[in-house]
Image (cartoon, rainbow, N blue to C red):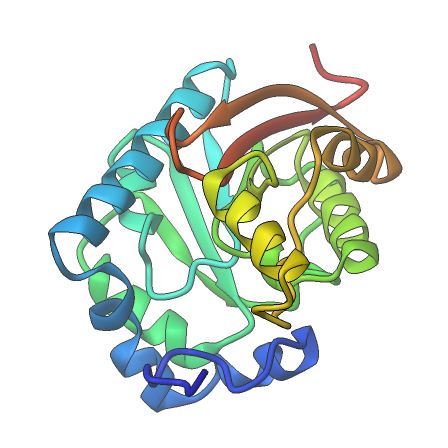
Length: 228
Protein backbone atom coordinates (compact mmCIF):
# COMPACT_ATOMS: atom_id res chain seq x y z
CA UNK A 1 0.00 0.00 0.00
CA UNK A 2 1.35 3.42 -0.91
CA UNK A 3 2.27 5.79 1.88
CA UNK A 4 -0.25 8.64 1.89
CA UNK A 5 0.79 10.67 4.94
CA UNK A 6 3.91 12.75 5.33
CA UNK A 7 4.19 11.62 8.95
CA UNK A 8 3.97 7.91 8.02
CA UNK A 9 7.40 6.19 8.04
CA UNK A 10 8.64 4.81 4.72
CA UNK A 11 9.81 1.58 6.36
CA UNK A 12 8.73 -0.41 9.40
CA UNK A 13 12.18 -0.86 10.92
CA UNK A 14 13.04 0.80 14.22
CA UNK A 15 16.33 2.07 12.78
CA UNK A 16 14.47 3.93 10.03
CA UNK A 17 11.92 5.42 12.43
CA UNK A 18 14.64 6.75 14.73
CA UNK A 19 15.81 8.93 11.84
CA UNK A 20 12.47 9.55 10.15
CA UNK A 21 10.85 11.41 13.06
CA UNK A 22 13.73 13.89 13.19
CA UNK A 23 12.60 15.43 9.90
CA UNK A 24 11.15 18.95 10.27
CA UNK A 25 8.43 18.23 7.68
CA UNK A 26 7.30 15.16 9.62
CA UNK A 27 7.09 17.21 12.83
CA UNK A 28 5.18 19.98 11.03
CA UNK A 29 2.45 17.63 9.77
CA UNK A 30 2.38 15.12 12.61
CA UNK A 31 -0.43 16.57 14.74
CA UNK A 32 -2.70 17.41 11.81
CA UNK A 33 -2.36 13.92 10.36
CA UNK A 34 -2.64 12.02 13.64
CA UNK A 35 -4.92 13.94 16.00
CA UNK A 36 -7.25 16.21 14.01
CA UNK A 37 -10.87 15.21 13.38
CA UNK A 38 -13.73 14.01 15.60
CA UNK A 39 -12.75 10.33 15.62
CA UNK A 40 -9.08 11.02 16.29
CA UNK A 41 -9.87 13.56 19.00
CA UNK A 42 -12.16 11.05 20.69
CA UNK A 43 -9.49 8.36 20.50
CA UNK A 44 -6.96 10.77 21.97
CA UNK A 45 -9.37 11.73 24.76
CA UNK A 46 -9.98 8.09 25.68
CA UNK A 47 -6.26 7.42 25.79
CA UNK A 48 -5.75 10.42 28.06
CA UNK A 49 -8.54 9.26 30.39
CA UNK A 50 -6.84 5.87 30.81
CA UNK A 51 -3.49 7.53 31.47
CA UNK A 52 -5.17 9.57 34.21
CA UNK A 53 -6.75 6.39 35.60
CA UNK A 54 -3.32 4.76 35.65
CA UNK A 55 -1.65 7.68 37.41
CA UNK A 56 -4.48 7.84 39.95
CA UNK A 57 -3.49 4.37 41.17
CA UNK A 58 -0.03 5.61 42.18
CA UNK A 59 0.73 7.49 45.39
CA UNK A 60 3.30 10.23 45.85
CA UNK A 61 3.92 10.83 42.14
CA UNK A 62 5.20 14.37 41.79
CA UNK A 63 7.54 14.25 38.78
CA UNK A 64 7.03 12.62 35.39
CA UNK A 65 9.22 12.02 32.36
CA UNK A 66 7.13 12.13 29.17
CA UNK A 67 9.12 9.81 26.88
CA UNK A 68 9.00 10.21 23.97
CA UNK A 69 7.07 13.45 24.24
CA UNK A 70 6.77 13.97 20.48
CA UNK A 71 4.96 17.21 19.73
CA UNK A 72 3.68 17.49 23.31
CA UNK A 73 0.51 15.44 22.87
CA UNK A 74 0.30 14.78 26.62
CA UNK A 75 3.13 16.89 28.08
CA UNK A 76 1.04 19.94 28.94
CA UNK A 77 -1.90 17.82 30.09
CA UNK A 78 0.35 15.98 32.54
CA UNK A 79 1.44 19.34 33.94
CA UNK A 80 -2.19 20.35 34.53
CA UNK A 81 -2.42 17.46 37.01
CA UNK A 82 0.02 19.25 39.28
CA UNK A 83 2.97 17.14 38.15
CA UNK A 84 6.43 18.44 37.41
CA UNK A 85 7.00 17.26 33.86
CA UNK A 86 10.11 16.87 31.71
CA UNK A 87 9.64 16.06 28.04
CA UNK A 88 12.20 13.97 26.22
CA UNK A 89 12.51 12.77 22.64
CA UNK A 90 15.16 11.74 20.16
CA UNK A 91 13.81 14.38 17.77
CA UNK A 92 14.65 18.04 18.30
CA UNK A 93 12.07 18.99 15.68
CA UNK A 94 9.31 17.22 17.60
CA UNK A 95 10.38 18.86 20.86
CA UNK A 96 10.33 22.31 19.25
CA UNK A 97 6.66 21.71 18.48
CA UNK A 98 6.10 20.48 22.02
CA UNK A 99 7.73 23.60 23.44
CA UNK A 100 5.29 25.75 21.46
CA UNK A 101 2.37 23.64 22.68
CA UNK A 102 3.22 24.08 26.38
CA UNK A 103 4.46 27.65 26.22
CA UNK A 104 3.69 29.37 29.50
CA UNK A 105 3.28 26.24 31.62
CA UNK A 106 5.33 26.65 34.80
CA UNK A 107 5.06 22.94 35.59
CA UNK A 108 6.89 21.80 32.46
CA UNK A 109 10.50 21.76 33.58
CA UNK A 110 11.96 21.62 30.09
CA UNK A 111 12.88 19.27 27.28
CA UNK A 112 15.86 16.97 26.92
CA UNK A 113 16.96 15.29 23.72
CA UNK A 114 17.66 11.64 24.49
CA UNK A 115 17.70 8.11 23.15
CA UNK A 116 15.31 5.98 25.22
CA UNK A 117 17.97 3.25 25.47
CA UNK A 118 20.42 5.59 27.23
CA UNK A 119 18.63 8.21 29.27
CA UNK A 120 20.72 11.12 30.62
CA UNK A 121 19.07 11.03 34.04
CA UNK A 122 20.35 9.79 37.38
CA UNK A 123 18.98 6.71 39.11
CA UNK A 124 15.65 7.40 40.82
CA UNK A 125 15.67 11.02 39.70
CA UNK A 126 12.04 10.88 38.55
CA UNK A 127 8.92 9.38 40.13
CA UNK A 128 7.30 7.96 36.99
CA UNK A 129 8.01 7.55 33.27
CA UNK A 130 4.99 7.88 30.97
CA UNK A 131 5.57 6.40 27.52
CA UNK A 132 2.74 6.49 24.98
CA UNK A 133 2.61 5.47 21.32
CA UNK A 134 6.18 4.26 21.30
CA UNK A 135 6.66 0.60 22.16
CA UNK A 136 4.91 -0.72 19.06
CA UNK A 137 7.69 0.89 17.01
CA UNK A 138 10.35 -1.04 18.95
CA UNK A 139 11.45 -4.69 18.47
CA UNK A 140 10.98 -6.90 21.58
CA UNK A 141 14.64 -7.18 22.70
CA UNK A 142 15.02 -3.39 22.50
CA UNK A 143 11.73 -2.91 24.35
CA UNK A 144 13.19 -4.83 27.28
CA UNK A 145 16.32 -2.64 27.26
CA UNK A 146 14.21 0.51 27.19
CA UNK A 147 11.94 -0.70 29.99
CA UNK A 148 15.01 -1.52 32.08
CA UNK A 149 16.37 1.98 31.47
CA UNK A 150 13.03 3.53 32.42
CA UNK A 151 13.04 1.47 35.61
CA UNK A 152 16.51 2.77 36.43
CA UNK A 153 15.46 6.43 36.44
CA UNK A 154 11.99 5.92 37.99
CA UNK A 155 10.35 3.34 40.26
CA UNK A 156 7.12 3.48 38.25
CA UNK A 157 6.34 3.33 34.55
CA UNK A 158 3.08 3.84 32.64
CA UNK A 159 3.41 2.42 29.13
CA UNK A 160 0.99 1.60 26.35
CA UNK A 161 1.19 -1.72 24.48
CA UNK A 162 -0.66 -3.02 21.45
CA UNK A 163 -2.12 -6.46 22.18
CA UNK A 164 -3.53 -9.30 20.10
CA UNK A 165 -6.96 -9.65 21.76
CA UNK A 166 -8.76 -7.41 19.29
CA UNK A 167 -10.93 -7.42 16.19
CA UNK A 168 -8.08 -5.92 14.19
CA UNK A 169 -5.69 -8.73 15.05
CA UNK A 170 -8.31 -11.41 14.38
CA UNK A 171 -9.03 -9.86 10.98
CA UNK A 172 -5.31 -9.76 10.15
CA UNK A 173 -4.90 -13.44 11.07
CA UNK A 174 -7.82 -14.38 8.81
CA UNK A 175 -6.38 -12.39 5.90
CA UNK A 176 -2.97 -13.99 6.43
CA UNK A 177 -4.52 -17.46 6.49
CA UNK A 178 -6.28 -16.70 3.19
CA UNK A 179 -3.03 -15.22 1.79
CA UNK A 180 -4.79 -11.93 1.15
CA UNK A 181 -2.07 -9.91 2.91
CA UNK A 182 1.63 -10.28 3.49
CA UNK A 183 1.80 -7.39 5.91
CA UNK A 184 3.23 -8.16 9.34
CA UNK A 185 1.27 -7.12 12.43
CA UNK A 186 3.25 -7.64 15.60
CA UNK A 187 1.09 -7.70 18.73
CA UNK A 188 1.82 -9.04 22.20
CA UNK A 189 0.00 -11.61 24.30
CA UNK A 190 -0.67 -10.89 27.97
CA UNK A 191 1.94 -13.47 28.98
CA UNK A 192 4.48 -12.11 26.51
CA UNK A 193 3.96 -8.54 27.71
CA UNK A 194 4.37 -9.51 31.36
CA UNK A 195 7.53 -11.46 30.52
CA UNK A 196 9.07 -8.40 28.88
CA UNK A 197 8.50 -6.40 32.05
CA UNK A 198 9.95 -9.18 34.22
CA UNK A 199 13.02 -9.36 32.00
CA UNK A 200 13.44 -5.63 32.58
CA UNK A 201 13.22 -6.01 36.36
CA UNK A 202 9.67 -4.66 36.59
CA UNK A 203 6.38 -6.23 37.59
CA UNK A 204 3.04 -5.43 36.03
CA UNK A 205 0.65 -4.03 38.63
CA UNK A 206 -2.35 -3.03 36.49
CA UNK A 207 -3.49 -3.31 32.89
CA UNK A 208 -6.14 -0.87 31.68
CA UNK A 209 -7.70 -1.36 28.22
CA UNK A 210 -8.20 1.95 26.44
CA UNK A 211 -11.67 0.72 25.50
CA UNK A 212 -13.28 -2.66 26.10
CA UNK A 213 -14.38 -3.09 22.49
CA UNK A 214 -12.28 -2.79 19.31
CA UNK A 215 -9.25 -1.14 20.92
CA UNK A 216 -5.98 -3.06 20.68
CA UNK A 217 -4.22 -0.92 23.27
CA UNK A 218 -3.44 -1.41 26.93
CA UNK A 219 -2.17 1.16 29.41
CA UNK A 220 0.22 -0.85 31.59
CA UNK A 221 1.26 0.25 35.09
CA UNK A 222 4.45 -1.43 36.29
CA UNK A 223 6.89 -0.92 39.14
CA UNK A 224 10.13 -2.20 40.51
CA UNK A 225 10.13 -4.79 43.24
CA UNK A 226 11.22 -2.22 45.83
CA UNK A 227 8.03 -0.13 45.53
CA UNK A 228 4.68 -1.01 47.07
